[in-house]
Amino acid sequence: MLEWIWKYISVLLVSMVKFGLGPVVGIAGGLHPLEIILLMILGMMLTVVFLSTFLGDIVYEFMKNTFYKNAKVFSPKTRRIVKIWNTYGMYGIAFLTPVLLSPIGGTLVSITFGESKTKIFLYMLVSALFWAPITVYFMEAITHFFTSLWV
Image 1 (cartoon, rainbow, N blue to C red):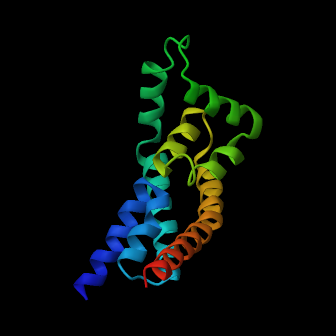
Image 2 (cartoon, helix red, strand yellow):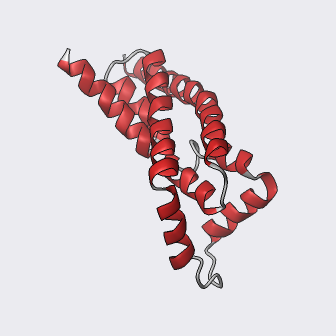
């Protein structure tokens, strides 16, 4: 019983930090794909709620006062993020959060651009609902392919 709880917690914590690693940990732990999907969605949404609700204003003020005080220097990564934001807005950031950014990164970018907490939560939820099954079944297929090569 305790072993399954640790497996659930590990998938949840990994999904909070890096969404794409949740299936790797879940498959390695022997969890069912539906369990992994639910834990990934829960992990991403816990990060989004925690950052946007409790730390959102603090992080926004910190980013504004430190990184955007002298907005002359842009890295290629920041230019891409600003270009995505200007082209697609919150839709683009939420869509790319599980794949390219992390739940932490996508939430911080959304907060930095001044998006409302409700919109951040809703768009990130839709994005997690979309990407979780795709990532889990993609990793399941890769695992099945490589294990069939070795057997």
